[in-house]
Length: 79
Image 1 (spheres, rainbow, N blue to C red):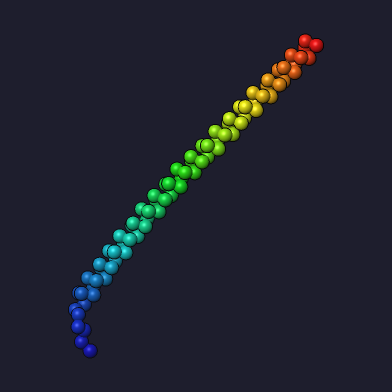
Image 2 (image 1 turned 30 degrees about the vertical axis):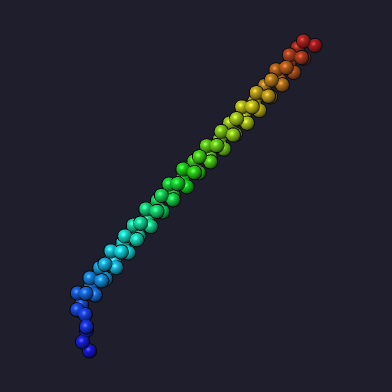
């Protein structure tokens, strides 16, 4: 049985297929890096907002407690 196409044609097709696969893997890797970077930025922004809310709540609570204690002590001293 004779081969109708020379072996070099198959080798060239195989090399082209390998190059296409390599490019596809590289494109997938870059896309994955972009998604990971985007998720990291979003996570940092979300955590930043959460820290701001906690800080604001803590400062407000501290101001209320200090004001209450101060006026309570003032009331007791002036009584």
